[in-house]
Length: 146
Image (cartoon, rainbow, N blue to C red; front, side):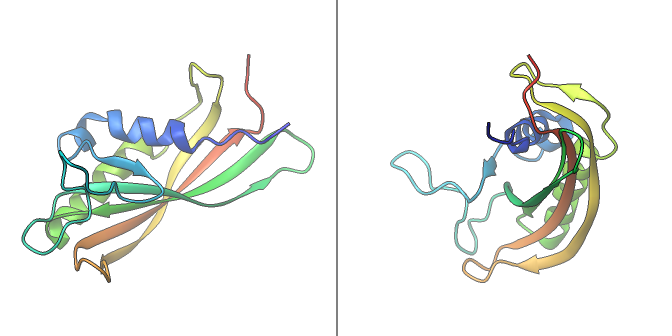
């Protein structure tokens, strides 16, 4: 049996949150979307920045005697400006902080999710785009509920 990964469920909750969606619908797992024939991608150069979010897994730990895990995620919130990045990080925090028990249609049980702090403003070393990073703690079942 493999461990359930709640990352996709948290990503969906962030993307579907009204405050986040008012700022961007670009919420990605792992890395920014690349350039395609019809879209310039997420990580653009100076003068062409757009807001977007990248969610990645920092790690997890399991309880010894119960099918429960704590998963830590990183939400990198990119903005057009430093202020925009901070506003986007605040919206992500509002979407997940202190949210109680819920079960996804696929059976992922989340017992709680929390804003576990941020790193403040930073700049992407490749594009120069401002971002603010937010750590998310997710307490979830290690198994799907059916």
